[in-house]
Amino acid sequence: MSTKPSLVKVGVIGSSHGIKGFIKIFTEGDTLNSVKPPFTCTVEDPRGNQSTIQIEELKLNGNHYLAKLKGFETPETVIKYRGFSLLWKREDLPKATEGEIYTEDLVGLIAISKETSQSLNYVVTQVIDNPAHPILELKPKTGEGETVLIPFLHQFVGDWNLESKTLEIIGWEQWIEV
Image 1 (cartoon, rainbow, N blue to C red):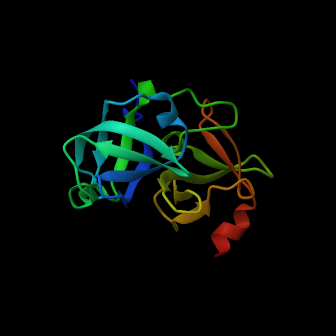
Image 2: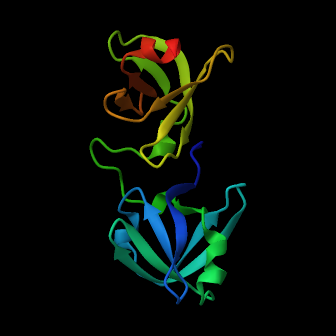
């Protein structure tokens, strides 16, 4: 039985756009490239409450998409979804390519030192959204000790192995001294 969630966050809903009720959607991958409206998807507010919306129209606009939601005709009505996460069924997502990973798959991985390959006795407990890049939250496996936050960037994080459930951390000492 899988412990991974059946819904995966693929984007965040931003502000309204124009006068016809379009809203911006910022995505982290190309999931929306392969879907054709109309379609129904799940959204989640910052408190974790989920609901479904129907997207009638979708178009790429620079670094984001513009979406027209069914039943929402003005910017004032659609803005209630600002800040909501766009969730997708895991089974409907494209398979991650070589060198890619869904951030949800990082949760539960054991941190190891890239330099020594030794366990650091920390586990990834959360991936925090950040405008510049995701941030990994690591907590001690024993529950005792400080929480460590590490930017999910190549200069700080090495390879991951989903089979052995490990994630390489580069220069671990700098993170526990801070």
